[in-house]
Length: 402
Image 1 (spheres, rainbow, N blue to C red):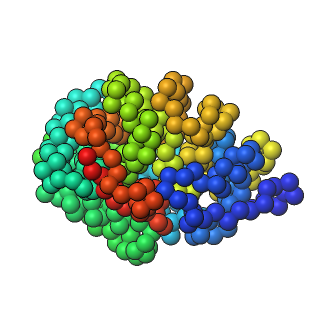
Image 2: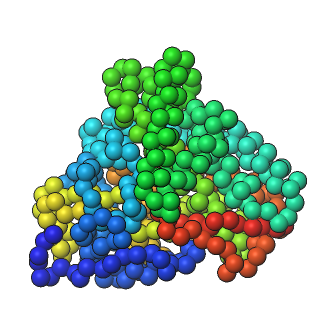
């Protein structure tokens, strides 16, 4: 690391004390300081820079001097004991190579294609809500809706047969968790990778209209290798399930603990898409930061000089609360019309399926609002247990009544 005397002090960043969906006080302090901060997290070696201001985050995530490919093989400081993606995943690549990989699936995640899936998604949600209603109150809405719906959404698009969905869910929960140890997580990554390897071989022989068939065709045409196909498929499945599963549960929790916002969506159903965007901005959906980058040369960012070889992180969660970009950033405001949030990332590694995630969250919230207008938490908010030691924030369960 650089030895400049004007660098900020190194902060040890752990998230053990952050409650529910509270905004991390460490993020708030780094935002208020305004400079890139220096951090050390519980795992990995050394220190790293982290950008929290909106414009700094955009710079770090778009400037080609910050490389994801150089991250491979580096044991950089991080929150989790292991990297989530497989080593050959698209997350460890840079443009233009990265751009070519993404093109192999881009046509399956367009806004138009996703809107064609909405009626099917509404049918799935309706069936799940039927079962929840029949089971009676109180009910764990995560068990009845958020989890099975998020598994169904990405799995149907990927081409995973329904009989394998429960196995896929078990693997994805192990991959993202730090509670079971690195060895069990790595084993789960190997197992889900082997599953998609075998499924890709089937799709190569018998293609269908799903993402895996498109990827198998790209492999046949020499656009990507089998290792790249498997790693990309695992990343999309794991992130597609868990980001939607927990973020949608967070949204339900926020609505049920903000009765005035809940009431507005009941009274103004057309407000839902804009409300979802504000919920995406407002919710601190992950702990600490995700994958970093490595500076490939010295880069001046504001008042600090990042040296060649330094790890650099970007906090989208912090950027979404930057008061220089968002008025009253700590307020949940469904009337916020200017909302260039970074909940889906930024730059070349922007989420591959933002329109799918938006549609799924809209369908889940609309289904709950229409079916259970009197929905409320079945326990006091203080009794909700939240995931600990995890990368993605969210409740362990969400008991509701109506």
